[in-house]
Image (tube, rainbow, N blue to C red; front, top):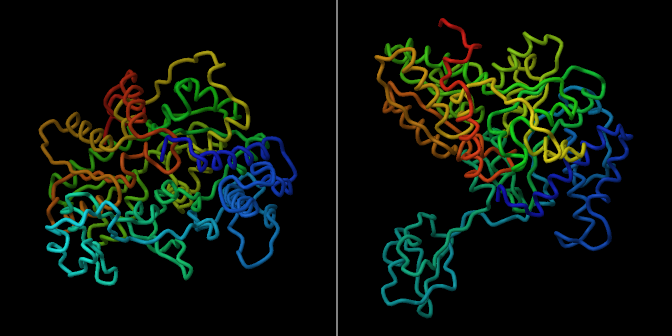
Length: 499
């Protein structure tokens, strides 16, 4: 659904916009009680069975957008309960980051294989013949599946000449590559946080707007309002996200109009990381000291890899992610500044809370949350004059936004620095495919390889906080990449000359 303006999209953006307005206009904190009525006006429900339920769901989304926890369903609490605690210019929210709003969940059925009305009652009945569990029988000439016997292997689906057999799954569970979505006692989606790596694909896939992550746009704007020097670092996936008129230069100008003191490309940190990992590969993997090198820029992928495959966890790179590397550059140049990472990723919010990262990155927001800030401040990109070109990073660093771009940048850096070194590359996008790749690596079948893992299918441009359709985002990133005056990571003057 990404890139399609649906009622779910509208509601999400309205919530972020209203919280941003509330912060910029310094409204009383109790004003949050009025917002469900502003977002869902009138007496007639538009999206669900009644307007009271609609407002209750919006209320919970407003709380999450301020970093507050969901209220207990069975207890009475004002919408503004605890809001005073989050009215400060610093990271506020506590885990869990990704939340299911119980009464918004439609309790979609779990994985089921069913025969549709397309069944023609054919003579061959190949579905019955291929079923290994004998779960298919013929009733009145048509196929019927015994759900207690069915193991969802899909053989009947593949063999049916009429495409009459379909497999259904709840969208959130189908999108979860670590199988962290289960059901509660009422059949509603429930997240197993011991498995969850906060990639956010479930919230991007839920068509009922029942899953949401916590935000800190209110705290960020509070920091700006209090006169702090707040500097934005923006991930390379940002190009094209804010409409055809929002050129990279205008986005940078728009960020300054929001109150940011300066803007840096996170692709700078990608350049540093590509060169560092090129040296690592040459010194450790090529010499046989380490089995393989897996990239680390995607936090969901790296957490999954280390958790599920502990025997090879040391093969996951310990290089700073582009977010952290860029933040440290900014801190050196602006030691008193607060840093906000703006990107496509929900998991970066948890990365910023790691003990080793807290002092580097003060806030994390997504492109969708930033869009709410732009709307709240009535920023129109079409009204802006074109600014100076953005040229802080190389094309290789900007390419990190798309699947394959990280491996390409590191490979190019290896070839530039160690031209006689030959090696192999494997990559995977989507956590299910990443698990397959790591299973091979764990079995010793990827020794000597560079492995790139991306939790989101398509790479960062498909993160949970993105706005643009993936194919359009790929095109936008390529155009921005090609405009860079520097091509390979080693050309960036911020990259150290020596290992």
